[in-house]
Image (cartoon, rainbow over all chains, first blue to last red; front, side):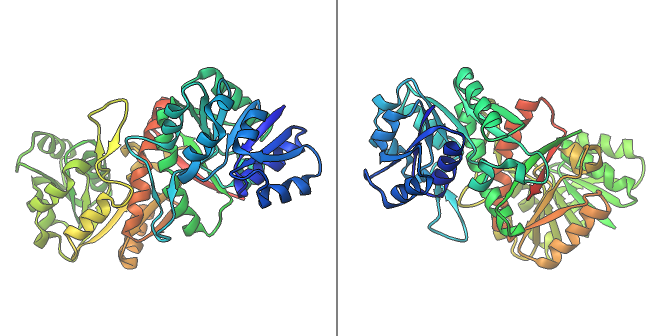
Length: 216
Length: 216
């Protein structure tokens, strides 16, 4: 499958490499056609790894991963162009974080709206599925490294798109337990969780962790 | 020990009953001196269960539990009176939730402030420790009912107060694993988590659940 990974940061490179390993052709999209990080990444992967602008990548992908920083995701997606995203599934892994105060991370949008919803409103002909934003990128593609099975979430308006993304999470990334939280407005819940994630990271000193839902 | 439980709703009654069972004298505080719920609760408990105004209860307690609804907690605590709370530990279990839109719960304060911080600022001579707000009241006092050990959090500015509250959580309520998230500003993280709690409740159909942190 041809897959677009928008963003050449750590998340994009980690997901991109995993997808290449799985045998897919991956184009990493950036603001510039030849972003140095993306070029270096493609070189390291040797085969099936391409790079280009956000628009090049979005046009190339049958499925699109948004791995850009939440604070610039909407702009990056506008640059990718609605026509290149039309009818496609957009897997949104981003969090609308403002890191400017190191002690107190905060969200740019929250509580009564979310980045997931903003993206869905801006691209109504695209099937936005929010997922993977609740874990560090090392956990996203390798949940088996944790000592127990943990949970990952999907939020989106299209049941069919969530079903496909759930299959991707299960068969490509080995997430054994995927919880459908509901429509895209449940992005609020998972995006707001990132502040607890951050506190847990500081309290435990580790970034490789996740939560497991335990019932009675 | 003499303990004040502010609030005669489900949370206050559940915690109050547990404390009575443990052999403590408990006064349930309400807006009115003889709130019908509090009177009925005291009658059911038969012994060691008292009722009164918020101020009566706060004056009575060596330790104070805030179990009022988050939207009225500050007013309830003003009614309890700063002089009755001075030098005491206030265990704050509340969440600043606005339930007016049933589909989309939202927080009255969040992201750059929290109810825990508001309470601490309003009562600077009281040791506020935020805890237990991440679980349903049936789980608060009975975490052993869940099929696995799960995690509970404490947030507060006083290390000594958090240590005492941790001992209370461990020895009275059987929370085996208490995570210190940091100062009272980490209330933001646990209060904002309530939206994910709500989504999980709707997705799983159960309210008796909690999260367990799983690391690598």
